[in-house]
Length: 390
Image (cartoon, rainbow, N blue to C red):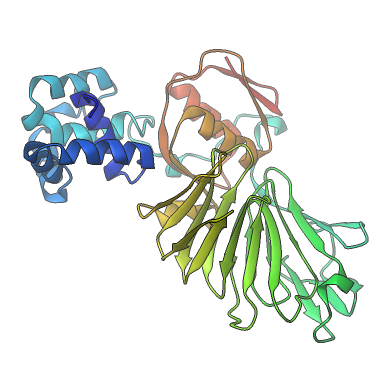
């Protein structure tokens, strides 16, 4: 096994405790843990919640001031080299706070102020909107459409309800899907939308996402196609399996369940996370049956992996009006910011070495987020549409 330094192990332990560790990192950590009884003992001690709390309290002198963590990771990591057994548990906790969550002193992302600088260009917020593309190619801008019947196609009424959602109501039974064509609902960046499918299944579309489906499902299957990120609560129907085509790259099969699919083209994985019920994820001949709390990941090469270490609250936070930042690297963070606020991001300088974690509410303006980045040493320019990282 490759020799792993103590500070590398500390970082892996941080990711493990935070439930942010990748499959590759987990494999390294497991190999280290199983390489000797001493390593196994260390792992058990350093991941024991009781030990962590006791060690953190014991070495509280590492914390500078009330609520402010020392922001010099090198100081903290150096403790490992000097007193591994004594300091490691406290170091694991402190690194997780100082390195992987770097807010201003005493503040957290989910408590960011909504105060912004003057100027309309600085007041971008994520909002609800979408475009409905009908089978004949005509479009309806849903946020400006009046409530009530929007259109009538193949015996199906398309309604906009009082709460702004779209609902399909059939006046005929068993209309073949081929006769009805398909509809697509698409959200731009900075927008979200919720709708009810013809079978009663509920769908939430995140920013820069789409769903394509027939106005009426046929009598054998319920087939839809999705891109971007969607959360689905599928109506139970044991006679008709519910099939989700994801970016024409994988298929998710369900009978009735709650799950989330993150399939943005610029992300390294297609992630299918099961919240309730049971789903089968298939990529070619590879399949994975998920249980609640598990996640299937497919990379660009088609490799299929399954993880049981998933933070469900973070996965579906966007459906509750929050953007979850899961210790993302800086590029990953800016991809989320780009979609959330409908802004372009350009990297003109060295990539900042910054990882953050937490949540951003939908009512938090982009200028507040930029102020947060500035407070952590990120230099940028913003013209109201493009963020240029200097």
